[in-house]
Amino acid sequence: MPLFWRIFLLNTLVLNAATALLLSPVTVSTPVPLTEAARC
Image (cartoon, rainbow, N blue to C red; front, side, top):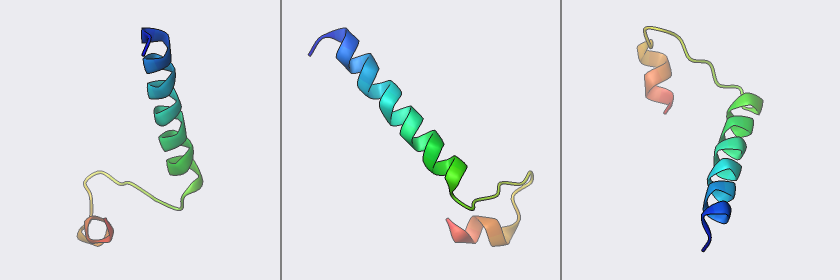
């Protein structure tokens, strides 16, 4: 597989993961409370 397609697929995976996190009702606090850590 050419390098172009490897980079393209990696970027697609990262973009999809970022979109999923953006659209999901997930909150992250610092420090992480025990209730948030238990949800994972």
